Image 1 (cartoon, rainbow, N blue to C red):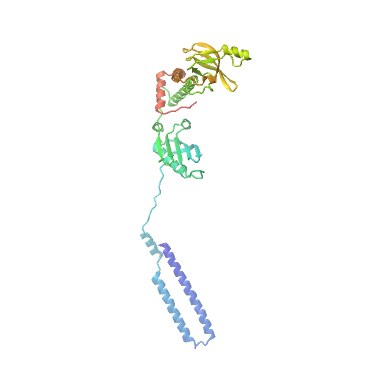
Image 2 (image 1 turned 135 degrees about the vertical axis):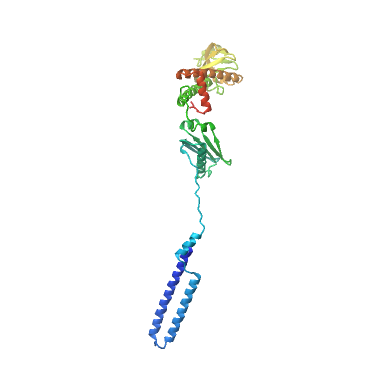
Length: 378
């Protein structure tokens, strides 16, 4: 309405200016005409021209009033008040918890363009707030461009953690996955969610922090025990890469040489004649590793099937190829038994160190698993 009113005022102003211009020009023209002729002779003509001019001006003014009637500002404001009003409601985003970016990796290749994001959630929060945060970060990630192969990115993964320690061990609270054309989905670790605002409790006279320390030390010892068992009784090794301390139960007989480097031909013949044959089922333990003409040789202790020492000498790694195929289950059983033995020693060491019983340690282990405490990996 205000625009129309301004337009009408503009037209009226232009009409007034044009009328004044025509009036002044006519007056000048009549004055010029009057001064060049006999005033009384041209008086009737001059009067007629003035009358015609006045009639034209009055007619134009009447038309202007009819088509563009003047309106007061009060009338316009009243008309404006009578118009319907529209209110644009602002869309409020859901509240987001306090967070920080822990790590961001971008993989850009012809097969896919992926954004992998890890965030740390801080302070008191809820499952809904974390879910809103993941959706918010996902929407931001989908707007990123300037990749070489795919715009927008084809794969987006966002993981939420509540501490750096859990981020290092991979204990996420919530994860959002978007792979290619699959609809984005959110996966929730309910055990981690349950611990967000949980109040720590005291058990066995130990705070939760102390129990977590016990769990951490216990798991470090357990991992060391597992690695020791795997090293002594490997099940996925290469015969050319055995390490000192590893043990292997033979599945077929093999030659044991007394020397690695004979001095001359006669010494070589003597070494071959003095070579011993180790029967299948015997166990060898690697003591040293040497290289001869690009081939690894192992100096080993030989033990019978019940573990009694028999002899020592050198074995060519090439002769070990194909060994232990038939005794994989036995190797695995030996590894398992050694692991159990070492883990029991770990439990005894932990109970002595912290002055707790075996039952209390078992309860702490169960609590750590149920609450998904996690642990540092060797």
